[in-house]
Picture 1 (spheres, rainbow, N blue to C red):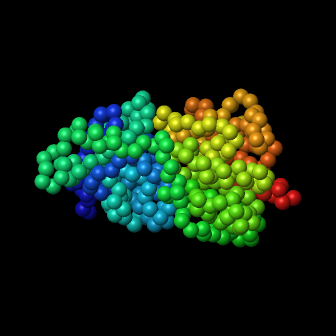
Picture 2 (picture 1 turned 90 degrees about the vertical axis):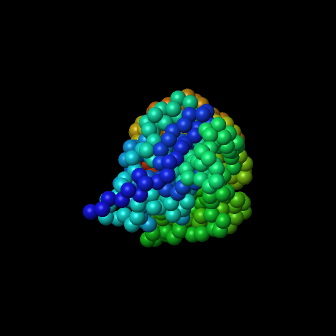
Picture 3 (picture 1 turned 90 degrees about the horizontal axis):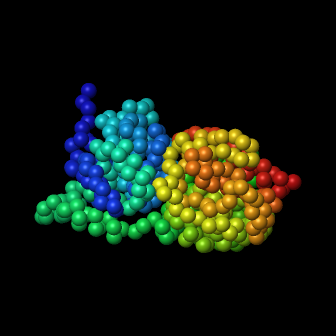
Length: 388
């Protein structure tokens, strides 16, 4: 059998961090240049779901697992219609995929969608650097982008560094409308329809409305720009605010819409970016984490039950709410319902006087784990209680 050397035969590439640290390797995926925020993901599997998660828009993802691409790529597992990461960094890419569901290699898919990556990088050293210094801007350069142009000589690192430092930062970035649907669409309930939910798409993953549909919910997915009137035009039993990219401090419109939902006492559920929006709607601040939580192995405690869950995360911002007391807000009493056991970051909020709650992580959890799937049942219970 012939083993493909596609990745090994690619052009030299260099990764340049905004603090001047550089890593050299070989092009992986498309050849060219890309810029974004360097972040690392600790998941050992599920790379296809990571790549197609809209929350990774404008981020260059470093995989801490050393071997990536082993199961190839298929057309069933993507969470959206395209790859959203700005760039991809791996240590040892698979030379040939080995899985009965695989339809093409990861390298081929990255190249097909124009995603610039780099392989052969010491991702352990790079991850340690990001843990110590924090997530930061980065550029990946290969081919003509590395040489300074077809007729030019090699570009010096100072020139590449200057270009990285000129690229936009994640703080202050308003990105949800860039990844959200432009037109409303409906995901029908599976089996008997029990409820209607209006879902605000801020970067929603495909598995999220599917998890609700499994519970008899007809989901009307609305653009990030949807107004309160458009939300209630679908006559929802509940309203959902999705995950998404960017700085929650810029999300004034979704915050305003959520406050309108809270005023009407409609059952409300938010995840990830939706959790940060609930925090802002209640009057709490948000802040940027040093390097964030990304992966499918993060321990979170549900403080309402004491249960510890292994959960899927992708967030670089968090809600600044007190862990040790119930807070009085415009919409009644609120408390922190979930907390990360690694660093005590707020991972969930709930109102005690209105039917509303949120979590910072991903209960739909494609490609797993499924410890937090009960949160969709909790949302159903809120709608049942409101209907009763």
